[in-house]
Image 1 (cartoon, helix red, strand yellow):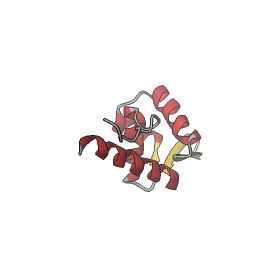
Image 2 (tube, helix red, strand yellow; image 1 turned 90 degrees about the vertical axis):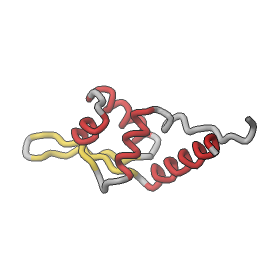
Image 3 (cartoon, helix red, strand yellow; image 1 turned 135 degrees about the vertical axis):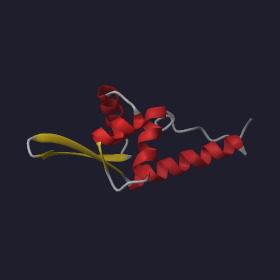
Length: 95
């Protein structure tokens, strides 16, 4: 059992992992799109996006479309690297 790399606790959350996975496939995504795709509540998703943003894994931009506020998320280089490390660590458990 020795030799296993510890899994990144920030990415080991199902919702945070889903968000990062989703953002890997797109240039950026609006909050409502992420919410719809993950099935998360707005409150929980906001908290998880804040955690990913504080870690430097995603970039969150708030703007307006007309008078409506829009939150857009984009994965960062650091986020991509963290995800790749997580996947490689996970492979160590299943190989």
